[in-house]
Image (cartoon, helix red, strand yellow):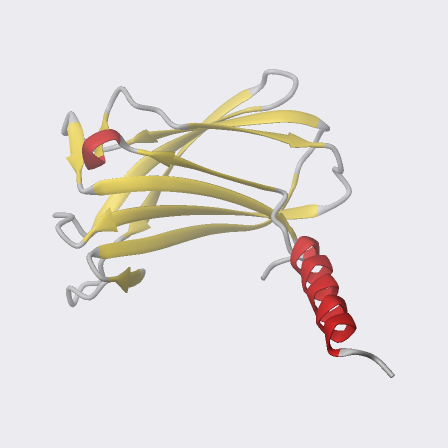
Length: 158
């Protein structure tokens, strides 16, 4: 007969094993000082990819306050490959819909908006560096709390 303590131990162990299975390959956040993203601040994320046979999802999440003044946020992402090749591409993150509602998830005074780049294979093994720049004409953007880059293997998504 299984005792209550053994049963709880088995459930805990299964929970730990299941939780580890869904862990992202990479997750890092950059918190903006005074909730301001100045043009000279360029959050950087370095990821070591060793398995190039797998596909990866890249998810970029920005958290703003409900006082954010704009409906979108233009950014540039610069990528440096392990061999040193560089690319820079612009993209737009929609923060609010045309009707004024939040495009992301609002909790209290925080709005979390994500942009997904799905199923990308990396061409070579090694360290990739991704650098973000805000792409607006103002010297700083107010009410930006943080930015997170999450990379997960396709098929391991939560």
